Amino acid sequence: MQFSHKFLLNGLELAALSSNEILPAQPILCLHGWLDNAASFLPLAKQLKGFPLLALEFPGHGHSSHRSSYAAYYFFDWVQDLVALCRQQQWQDLIIIGHSMGGMVATALAASFPELVKQLVLIDSLGFVVADEATVARQLRLGIESRLKPPSSRVPCYPSLKAAAEARLKQSDFTLTEAMLLAERGTVQQADGFRWRADMRLRQQSVYRLSSAQAKALIAAVECPVLAVLAQDGMFKEQPVAWQACYAHLHRQMVNGGHHCHMTEAKQVAAYIQRFLSAAS
Image (cartoon, rainbow, N blue to C red; front, side, top):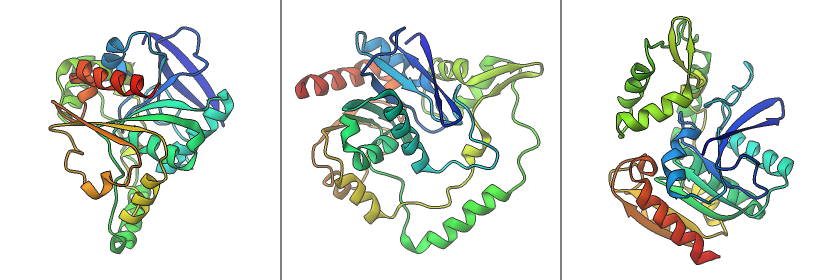
């Protein structure tokens, strides 16, 4: 995945990496997780040679534009970004591979715009982040206070690319090799050192969470076949069985590793994906 592409969308520039120099008419769309970037799919792309992969970067991530100063990062806005992009590029019946947050965005897209998604692969992602209805007022307060809090006067700066990667490593479950891939794509070198490109506002609290009932309703609306590749030491291995039952066509596979298993266990994850795609073709 060595070719760069740009999309101008509603005043935002969305960046992507692709396996193809010429943009495929019908790509396999890859969606990264929160605070990651398109480079998180590089190990998987090496194992899926010949597949027209296109790893898109959400606004605020990687080389994509940040949202304007008066905007915020709402989860469903990322779904809207995808719908607008699909309409701009005239994409339908896509295969989508989503990791973590990218899988949640793809699930919401498949539920609300089923004509856009033919097959869905979730990598250590299942369902949505939810909250009890009783916490809605507190969640709203926390989210608003988080946004009104004065921004940090200084974005963290690192003396070297390796130092930036090591900082990312402290928050992750992979090795320095994977951290360097994300750092090489996700940092910018300035006069005083290396800074991460991601918008700091992504770390603000959400002003709302879906309720369990709302999440189940969205999942139940997904009509396409779904493959969930869950990591043995990941974040979603104990997701309620009741949630899994909401998917109409769910295939579930377990792999070794942690939350970024598509980076650390790319060969096994790719094998499951190939088997799933070929079975449905």
